[in-house]
Image (cartoon, rainbow, N blue to C red; front, side, top):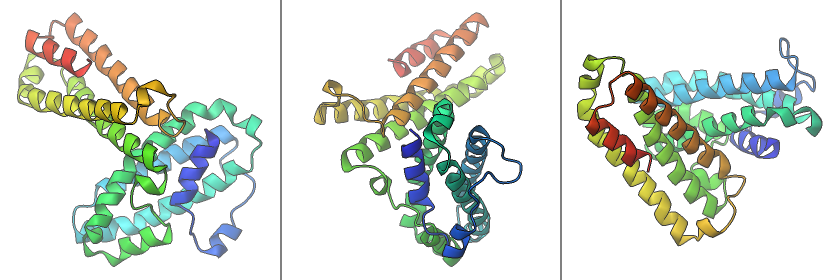
Length: 256
């Protein structure tokens, strides 16, 4: 798992100027005392990178994002190189953190691809940041052709499930329930259509008869984890007397 993490991070952050790479310390940076600390710092930086990427909607916001991305991506590369020097025995306990980081990076790749498709809204500054860090243009730049398709489909399914979990978590009373009632059919349809695309791809590449690859596991596990959150919300709403028949029926379809 560490190998996959570093492969993805360094693929995305592989072209800092040579002077920056040469000055990366072999020991942890100030305030970072262990591999676990480094992973937590990487998670925080990756989350901020995704937030910055998702904030871009026009030329002005793209220019603003470019400066912030440069700072965050440079820090991530430094942290990756710090983590790389630790013996493998020192980081086995960090599998969960690494998988979480992989999830975050995976979810950011489609956003990067979308921004590159619109030429970063004409922002030369953002184009330069993407070029400097060799940001991949698609999932195919990080994964094998077969896994890239599967990862993209599972990410789409996970995003749809995440939307459901978000709206369910907002329901605290009857007013909240009524407020999201018009969103439920759309959310249900989104999850079902995403799941059907995953199932169709599984049949096409005979995925069901072979072991899931290491590269695909984080995306699959993310879907399973969000499904468990939805199940917990379903139970909470039932205990609170807020699980109406229509909502219950939709959640059964979502969790099918």
